[in-house]
Length: 350
Image (tube, rainbow, N blue to C red; front, side):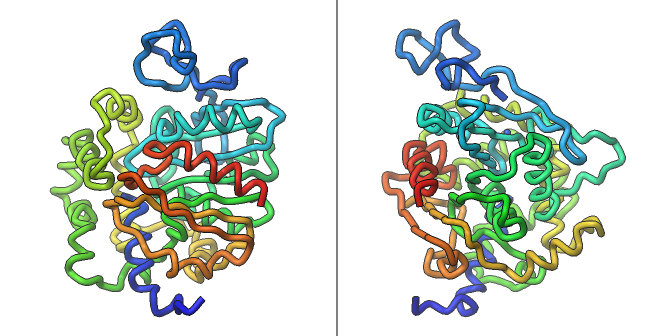
C-alpha cells in the first residue's frame, strides 16, 4: 500500500478517538430475539408486534462490574461478543443476533459500564471510561463466562474496545469485525489540533469539557442523544419507539458520568486509574492486529471516520474492507444488520 500511516495519522487519530465517544436475553428454542411487547415472536410474522427486543437479561459479576448482557443461540456454538457504542445500547444488534444465532453462533451482547442494568459492584470504584478500563471489562466478561476465545465485533466505543482487545490480548480473539476500522487513539494524539471543519464535527467534546456541558447533558440526556443519532446517521429514519427502546439504557445512574469521563480523560481533564497506566502506554504505540479482520463503513457516516487506506496497514492478518451503501450511517449494525452479520460469518471463515 502506498499510503503512509504516519502521514495519515493526524486525520485518523483525531477522527477515530473522538468518534468513539461519539448491552440479556435468555437463549430460546428458535435462537431468535423476542419481543416483550407481544405474546408471539415478531420474527415469525404471525403477530402484530412492536419493536423487536431482547427477553430477560442475564447478569454476571466480572471485575468491578455486575454486567447485564443478552445471550442468544446455541450454548455450544462458536462465541461472538458484540460491543455497542455511545450513545446507543445492545439493541443496535437486535436484528443482527437472529441471523448469527440461526447460523449456529452463541451471541453475547453486554451493556457497557454505565449503561442499562450493568452496575459497579462498589460505590467507591472510580466512574472511569478510559479505553483500557473498558477493554479490561471485555476481558473480565469473557473470563467470567469462561470464554477463552471469541469473534469480536463492534462500532464506536465498541469498535475501539474490540480493536484494543485484539492487539493487547491476541490469544483471546478468533476474528474481528470493526466498524470504522482502527478507532484507537491516545491522549497525546488527541492533543493535536485539527482543522476547524474537523473540530466543528466534535462540538460536543468542547461542550462536555465545561461545567455547563455537564449540567446540560444531565438535564437533557435523551434530547442530546437523539441529536447525536440524527447527526451521526443523517439518513437513518429511526422512529420514536426505536429511540425510546435504547434510551432506557441511559437511565443508568452512572451514564452521564461515564460518558463525560471518556472525553475528559482524552483531554487530560480527568485522571485515569494508575492500574491502567501500563495498558494505556501500550495502546499509545498503536500495535498491529493479527486476527482476521473485516472493517466496515457506511456511506453516510456523519460521525466522521478515516479513509480505510489510513488504517489498513494496522491489520496484518487476512484483511478486507467493505463499504456499505444505501444511506448507512454511524450505527451500522442497526442500519445494515444483514451486512454486519455477513461480515461476522465471513470473517470466521477467513
